Length: 252
Image (cartoon, rainbow, N blue to C red; front, side):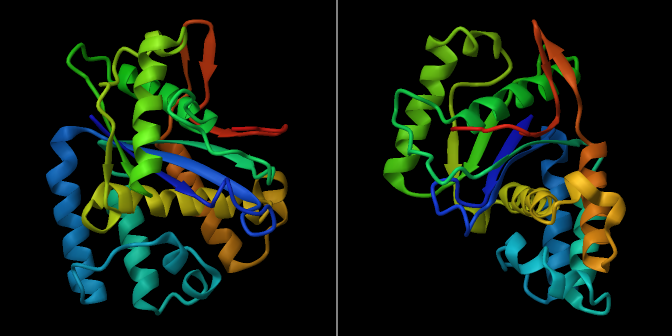
């Protein structure tokens, strides 16, 4: 299994610019990688007319796109949801939290909390497949060489040197940071992360029954499609929720 991670919003930026952060992982079984990559390539070519375009949720998951069903971008996103995001060999997990505006960058000795929480959800998904052969490679969107190096070191330090990390037996200690422009899995994770962040930014986690706009209705629809491909699972004494929205202060 390969786990593709994307973080929507900047947890180290100003609160008013990124009030909500969504750390999302899309886990794809190895056997489906070729099929999903080919499907995404075809959809880009046939609908958008550009098979090499890099997908960004900010360009797709917005009011302008989701309220104009005649647009190619709308048709493209709907097809991505129907044929890629909810593919039978894909599962999702998300950690969503409010940006405190005071988060500090982590160093090589401490893995940020949202990454720790995602690793536990990746482990839960891998175990849910119930195969002794299921080992997971984690691939994340690259940001900057120094940041990625610190994350990689902190990633392995967590797996090897922490009491929690030693329970994550399905995750290989070889994190990979890849360019999203050339990695279909990260682009799909980016779209899913954008949907989940918009869900909370619009306040739909608190009052979805009051939504009235087409934009809100589509975000709810897409959120529910993703949630249906998530799992809740117990690991040891911990109950792991596939979709976790922090209701209290969440410091990374």
